[in-house]
Length: 173
Image (cartoon, rainbow, N blue to C red):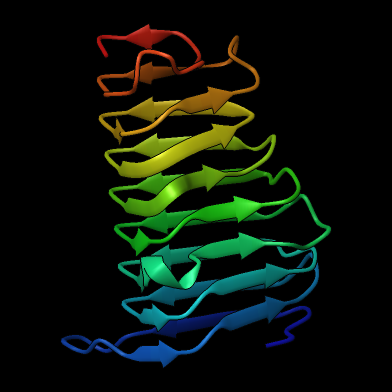
């Protein structure tokens, strides 16, 4: 899809679970927003261009199909996953914000690699390594090493993470 200056919202009907088969690519500009609710994506979700916001709620992105990747040039993208199951979340440039809430990210080797972006993880489980610029985490499980560039910002609270992880201050972890 190429959707400049658009807001596309695809929402499942109550009691339904629509399936999008194949890779889903979204291109747009700084005004483009995408909202997906209650869908099963049987393929990768690729985000290209200087997008504004991408929100997934109650969605599944089949983990073995490459997850979510941003390869665009824009850094104003806000990426949010709420109660989702997904493969790895990756980006090649810093984003404005990456938010994971009540989600499971199964990346085998890499769960989240969001360059120098601020990452917020609340009540989520991440299988694989996690790398970000800043981290705010609470009530979450990280099963492999967490590497945060700016450890003087943020906090990790009431979470499990491996001892060799480089994170901001920890509170009751």
